[in-house]
Image (cartoon, rainbow over all chains, first blue to last red; front, side, top):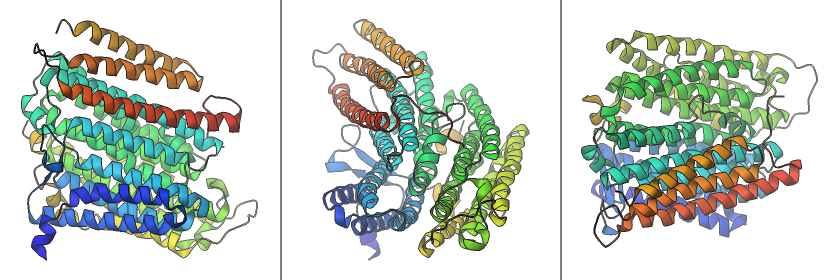
Length: 482
Length: 102
């Protein structure tokens, strides 16, 4: 049994399964829901298989069709890719089971093909090893995400989707232009080969600038975050959860790969800039979240803020800092999905998400409010959550490198996060002025949010094990040695 | 290198022109066209890159990339136009809405 698990091409299954499922859902609209659920389950099992394989052996390689890099397409997974894939699989399962109850029959048929295509694109991205495949996967992710944003067809959703589409296209084109300059300079697109070839010259700087700007726009780093709140707040809750928890992380993942493997020696000044923008994002996102009057907009601004934290790791640049950023990414994926699903329950229940009019939600949807509060614990970074471990690692890294000033935004951000989480929880206990009609929320939808929130907390308890796993195949070796 | 330079400059020029239009024009159709102009600029440089060495046989990799890039651009444009039609039908104008927080 064990040797068979180690030899199966799990990486291929992670891409082929969801794309076949998407086509099947599109062709057999009536059966979209069972087909979709089945596909997501099988895809998650493939991610587990790949994870098992990398814990037993070293990193995973697969040359598609027998054509390896640099001529053909090679799939590659080290600890970093596998953790992204596993996190995607867990969040995707939760969102899928939630969506199966949340949408009505007509929406189900529209949701599943796009959702499975999004899953395909994200899996392909995490398994990519060359710059052009990453471009294609990023574009597919963007297109599927935009189409999902516009799912309801409401005016807000369409407007948010177009803004998102224009931003993501602009980001992709800047990235592609950067890749063109890299190909001009070095004649290859393979990440590992570029890492050995790259040298410091104007073409490299230009490429670095274009790629970083494009990906910062797609990751919604302050001040390029303008497209995120309208898109994430106007999409339906399961889609918002996927966008905030997973989709913004894909562009960050690509940026991280560039940084770790191609540009490690170019670092100092741009890294400081990333750190400063990250701080600005923490404060701006926090203040906007505090000011928001709608729950989903608050959660969307909280995403802007949490993305800021990811960029504080760049000026620190040591292994601890990268571990911290990755841990924040994982715990944020779980916690933010839980928050958006909890917001979805509130929206389903009362038909609105105005924070001031939350009418005794704590008594009527106790599981949902518990999920929101627990996810909030991880977002704030209180022990023993995943968010706590992440912030601890970042603070430790800033003290170790003698750059103590980065601890200020990390700690202050936690206070702001606490303020906006308690603002919501506070209103959940009070009575609204106008009584409202309420719709019964299925118990499974409530439990899904809670399970994700508990997972975000539990992530803090399994930190040593997860961090060892992250280092399979040494994804950080290039950047740490400088 | 010298043969490449005019194409690169034109491509970068188109990219900047498109970026300017994308940021300044409020009408969405113009924004979508602007993104396409930017894309054309990038593809122009990519096609010209096929002659990056002196050998008489062009490098096939950039051409393969351009075809993929064009397919992606066409798909994105189709999606954008579709969304634009939906927005124009429901709101009566082809411009982006502002504040969501009411």
